[in-house]
Length: 140
Ligand code: GDP
Ligand code: MG
Image (cartoon, rainbow, N blue to C red; front, side):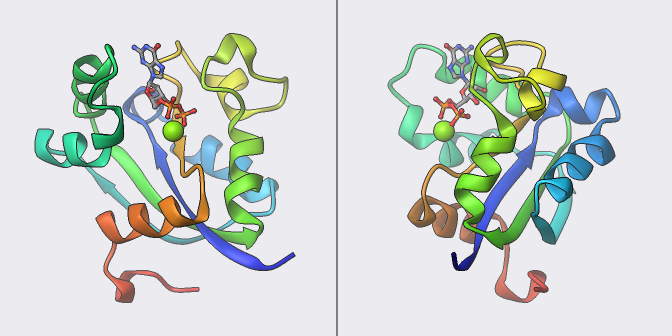
């Protein structure tokens, strides 16, 4: 299996509860390496652009509101089959459906405040990494 990259966000519900380290440890324990990381407070424009694919969904406004409600930590993760590996350790979108031992089962507050984002395909990973990082900010 090839070493690839994915894009992750530690969401405002997790930074608010000081869980940046705990979430990152679970990512690292799952075999992912943090090759870029920064703490930012997303602007409304940034959040709307990032979640543009969800524009027509009924929760879009709330989602943008939530993602701009506090700081987030955006990260590039590297590892074997990184996109799937990350999605596996994140768990299902709704923490009620997430398996034991996953980040969302362990930490998420709700289907919206679910602690982490992770890219859902390698193509989207490339787009999302480019959205937040310059090439020189990624150190593999
Ligand atoms: P993900 O890929 O597992 O993060 O899930 P989606 O791409 O389907 O949704 C993006 C994000 O929107 C989720 O991680 C949640 O933060 C939020 N979200 C998804 N479904 C709902 C919902 O039914 N209600 C609300 N309020 N937020 C949701
Ligand atoms: Mg998604």
